Length: 136
Image (cartoon, rainbow, N blue to C red; front, side, top):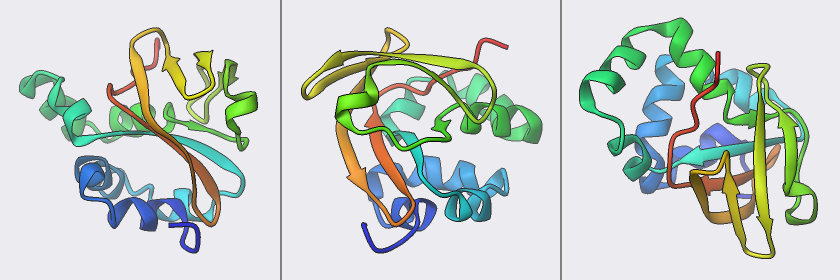
């Protein structure tokens, strides 16, 4: 994964196929692949499955809402495990809060990092078990 940009790397991971589909639908592949030094909180397929189907279908059908949700998962700086805990402004504009340390982190009090500090050519990825929803 370290040799290719983040959206391309995600497309090679079967646990992230729902995220990849959403990123393609929102026309964010080039934006994510072109961004430099970002951190991506990547929800697994199981994370998307936690959302009631009607709610998920509604978000997927609304391009503006989908972009808002997806860009809320991207922080425009690269965060290492040493700098992960804290409040971080997302590309969407709202803050997210990461708590914990070592190999155990939680995002916004509900989403656990299940795999972290994965490097791609342009990003650091933390795979999370719950889709993060912006406040606004």
